[in-house]
Image 1 (tube, one colour):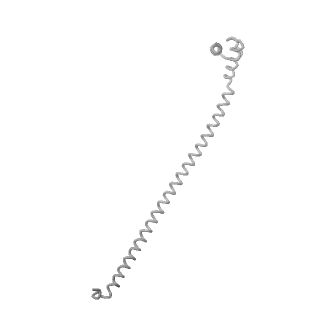
Image 2 (cartoon, helix red, strand yellow; image 1 turned 180 degrees about the vertical axis):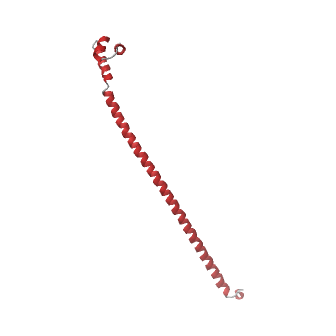
Image 3 (cartoon, one colour; image 1 turned 45 degrees about the horizontal axis):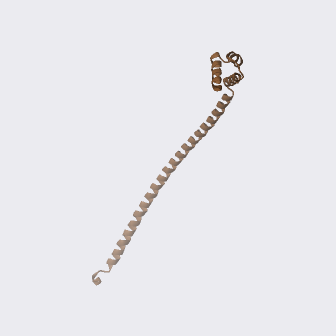
Length: 130
């Protein structure tokens, strides 16, 4: 059966097979280069996006730190204002004087508060005592 096949057929088949392998190699090489190019583009895009995101988050972090610092300063200022409030001191003094038995006129003259304020402080202290 094989005696009827000419001797060049196996060589021809081998040449065809080699040319197909070579063509496959060329196509795979081209496809490989395209994939590498696409991958490089995507990596560059992701790198730029990551840089933008990191820059944005750093900016937000800096603003947050500045806001926290400002809040802390405002709290300190508010505490100082509460401690140094002359009206608060007047009311504390008026309350102490009511405990000692001062009347409304004494509160007005000593603490520098108005009559309604003096009456209110006196009424509140008397109510607490009751």
